[in-house]
Length: 118
Image (tube, rainbow, N blue to C red):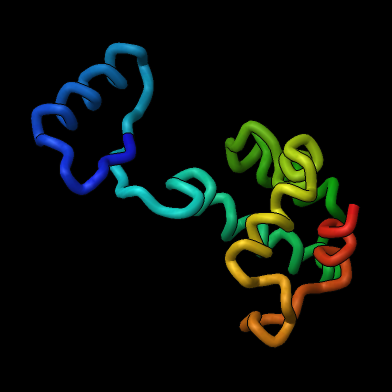
């Protein structure tokens, strides 16, 4: 549930009740880039690239570990990026000013750069 600044507390309670009625978990957050789900997935997607780039696991192993069998996500980060379109992640990073190496805290691995181009 994305709550703008001027939202009445009654409106928030109604939305929280509605999410329970439809058997969902309503997470109340402020408006911001990526919303809550994308903010959460950004961290383990980024770490997934590092794990593969460092040779500690294959893409398939990472997807299997984060997917429904072990970690409980519907799919792993590489499958998700492939289905969403790798250009989506690149465009998000570009809008955030993260596509220029001098602006990043960590240099992207060649695998991430390849995903950005694919």
